[in-house]
Length: 357
Image (cartoon, rainbow, N blue to C red; front, side, top):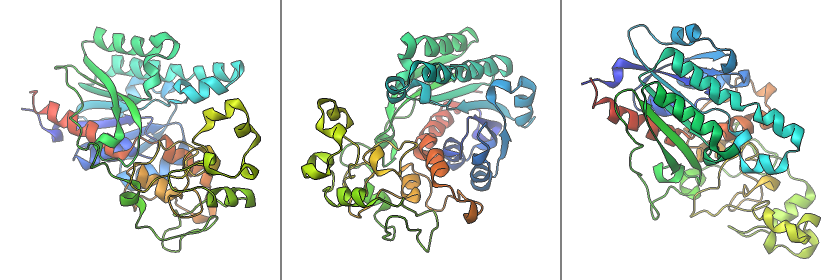
C-alpha cells in the first residue's frame, strides 16, 4: 500500500500558497510552486518552506518541471489556472478587445494539459470556477478532460462549495481529480447548514480598527480609507443589508435605474451568523461587493479577508511594511485557493493513495 510520504507535490499557478498550505497540513511534501506573479514569492516561500519558481507556465518545459520533483518521490501535479477569463462578471463587462486578451489565458489550461502529457504524474488535481464547464460551449474544459483520458487517467469532477469544508465563505468551485490507478472523488462534506463556520467565528475576535487604519498588533489588519459619502453609506447599512436600505439621498445614479438591480451586493454588509460571500480580488473594497464589516463602519481588512479564505491568522504576506500595497495584497488573497478547500483536496488524494500500490 502506497503512503503519503512516497509522493511529492508541485503546485502550478501557486499564488501565495493556499492550495500548497492545504497539502502541507495533510503532511504531503510540496517541493515547489510555480507562478508568473513574482509578488507572491515572499508569502509562498516564507509560509510553506518550498521552492518558488517565477515562471510563465506556458514557457515551462517538461525537463524543468521534472526537475522540481525529488528523484525518489512519485509525482502529484496540482494547480488552479487563473480563472478570470471564465468568470461571468468579466465576460459580461469586457469589450471585445479585452475579451480576446482574457481569452488568451485559455492557453494556460492547455499548457497544464501539455505538461501532464509530458511528465505523466500519477495523480492530478485542477481547481477552477464553475463557469469553466460551460465557457465557450465547454470546449476548453472538455478538451482538458479528453486529453487526460487519452493518457490513461480516470477522471472525476464536480462543483463543490468551500463552506461545506470548513471555509467561512460561500465559494463554489469546479474540482477535477484524476489518477492513473482508479477514479476517486472529493471527500464528503465536513460541514453542513447549522455548523458552517460563520463570519463572527472567523474574524469576530480581531481588534476593532477604523477605516484607513493599521492595527498595532498586526500590520495586515488594515481597512481601506473611506470617502465621506462612503462612510455615510456604510453607517446607513444594517448588518446583512445593502444599498436597498439607504435613504434616496445616498443612492448612486445606477441604483436608481432599472438595471441597477443587478448590483444588489455592492456596498453590502456581511452578516455575523452567516458565511462570507466569495472573496474576490477586490475583497477590501466597500463598493465592490458585500465586503462591509458586520458591525464596524468600514470594509473588511486584508487580514480578515485572508482568514475568510481560511489562511492561518499569522500567515505572513509582507516582507517590508514600507512597500505595502493593499491592492496587490487583495488580489493575491482573492485569487488564492482557500486553504480549507486545499486541505479537502489533499485529504481526498491521501485517501486514494491508500488504495494503490
